[in-house]
Image 1 (cartoon, rainbow, N blue to C red):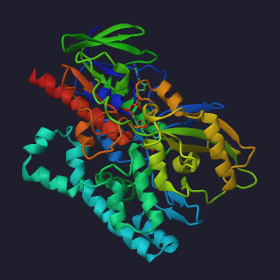
Image 2 (cartoon, rainbow, N blue to C red):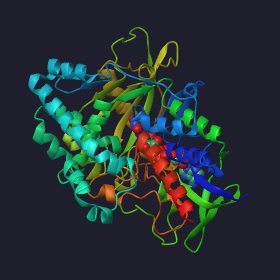
Image 3 (spheres, rainbow, N blue to C red):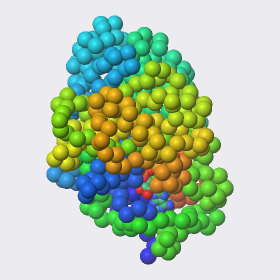
Image 4 (tube, helix red, strand yellow):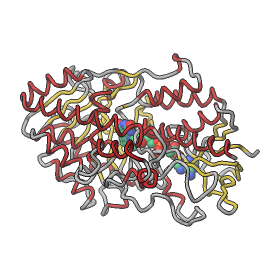
Length: 491
Ligand SMILES: Cc1cc2nc3c(=O)[nH]c(=O)nc-3n(C[C@H](O)[C@H](O)[C@H](O)COP(=O)(O)OP(=O)(O)OC[C@H]3O[C@@H](n4cnc5c(N)ncnc54)[C@H](O)[C@@H]3O)c2cc1C
């Protein structure tokens, strides 16, 4: 059977594109290599209990809600976000600690009581600057079609005004340091560069908007875990009526000239008028008529080591353990140089801990509590040889035992290295968010949702415009769907 559209990959971008295109009247076949949907928003099972292995913070939920609204998914079949208070606990080697909350006012008060009145004023000032960047950047660089330099050049005063407002000409680090002098706050704000796997030393100050997105608009838990977002997208897809093929890997793209004709899969040839790639593009090396994989010259975003420990709730149920905890090292600035210049895992890495049950209101086990952890690392393309997953998991354990979050006997039940990630997601090289945003031109060099050198080929994923992270990959799916419809309407 020839479909109107084949969507390759059931990550959140592919799911979105497939749901919208089906709802808009096309015959869509979604082909997923794995036995489950969700991609990097993944799940592992421990003693039959599901635990998230990917995202833990959801921002911009309205981007996903808009997909449900369009396909008419009833409210009861969607997901529920959770406002967390406290949300984050930041711990510094000096012994300083600060709690962040869902309500900004509470965060300001907490920063003042932990770091002083000057720190509070600095955060207030930075967040108002961050909000202005977001309001100027979102319509042109996130929600709208991929920005093009040519459009910028003929864009007139409106676009140029926006470019000035997004502070694209200096780096994130220099912008933060020009406004914030409290070292702990500098680290917290620089860490937002890692939300799309980028380098705070070179990324444009525009990425400063992520602070507003999380602190001003909200970084939420999701009842039941981030897998509930995937399940709701799956229900949207089913409601729309798309055909889903699991455990079917696409092994090649079929072209006639520059026109895509379908895909080769492990279960035969599937023909279609259009193909939407919802997976990392690096795997299609040599498949495109032009010979070059779009975006292949860009620096990859960070990868990461992950480990899940089961913390025994007895003797200490730890009522004050925050949903998210970040342990900063002595020299956080060096972490970016270790990862992007030296291609190595920092000697003393920043450790992120998500107490999943507290974050997502689950009760995974009666007597044990899952702690999902992460250490940033280089992607394979920019790294020397990297340690195995268990070696880093043991370093994480040591730090968490010192902090009394774990005991030496608590079980490590799952771990993953950048190499494991690269194997699980072909073409990613282990990068979590596609190409990094390490230069002021990154937004313009990002792969557009309609590939320019081929006809009928589109991209809906975190490795294309507008970038990585759940809401942006979902938006990528919407923009790719818009491109497909636009092209079909124009003939
Ligand atoms: C550990 C971790 C933590 C993260 N934390 C956050 C966070 O807190 N907040 C946030 O917003 N984001 C976070 N992210 C990023 C977010 O998960 C991703 O940006 C997003 O899920 C990517 O979606 P995608 O549409 O690009 O598809 P992907 O997730 O990349 O999925 C691609 C799918 O395509 C399939 N596929 C690949 N090749 C083929 C093929 N040849 N044939 C058929 N199928 C194929 C794969 O099996 C996969 O299912 C995190 C990611 C990870 C891994």
